[in-house]
Length: 263
Image 1 (spheres, rainbow, N blue to C red):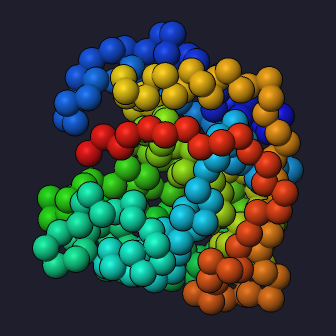
Image 2: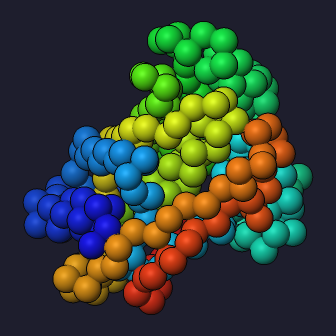
Image 3: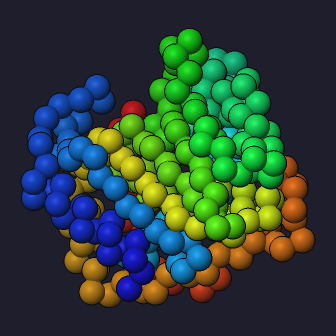
C-alpha cells in the first residue's frame, strides 16, 4: 500500500467522522478540519493515490504552465487538452494576476534557483503567490500559495502551504504536482529530493463528495504500491522540461471516482 493512500485516507475518514459541518462561499456545505499535515520522503516514495486514478499528466502540464511558462493564458492549457481552468477564464482568456503571472511579476522562480545554487543555506527561499495588491484582479485567490525551501545535507526539502484544500479533488492533484516540482528543482540545481511536507489550513470534503470518498475508503485494503517517478536525466535547465520528460512508471490504480467541482 502506498504511503500516500494510507495518510490521505486516514485524514479523509477523520474529516467525515469529526469534521465541522457548515456553509462556505460556494453554497455547497462541507465537512472541514483545520491544519492537516502530510509529509513524505521523496527519496523513498512518490506520493500519488492508487485507490483512485489521479490525472498525473494534467497536473504536470499545469505545474509547468505556472512555474516554467509563468503564464496566465488559459488557452495555452486548452491547447494541451487541459480544461481545469475553464470555469475561471476571464474575457481576455486569462486568469488575471494570479499563479504564473505572480511568479513572473516578481521573478520568483529565477530567484529560487539562484539561491539554491549559490546560497543554499539561505532561510528566505520561498515562492509566495499571495501578493495582496493582485488578489482581487484574479478570478480566484490562489489555494496552494506558498512553498518554502530548505537544503540539508545535499537534499532539497520543500513545505507547501495550501490555504484551502478540496480533499476529494484538489488535494490529491496538488500533492503529486508539487512533489514533481521538488524533483524538477532538485535536478536543475544538482540536489537530491528530500522531504516534502504538505500543510492544508482548511481541509474539507463537500457534501456532494461524501459518497465518492466512501467508495474510495472501501478500497483501502486493495491499494497498490506507489509508482516510480521518471524524469529525463538529460535535462539540467529547469526551463527545458516538457511534459514528455516527466513520467510515472508502473502506476497501478483503481478507477476514477467522479466528483463535482465547487466553483
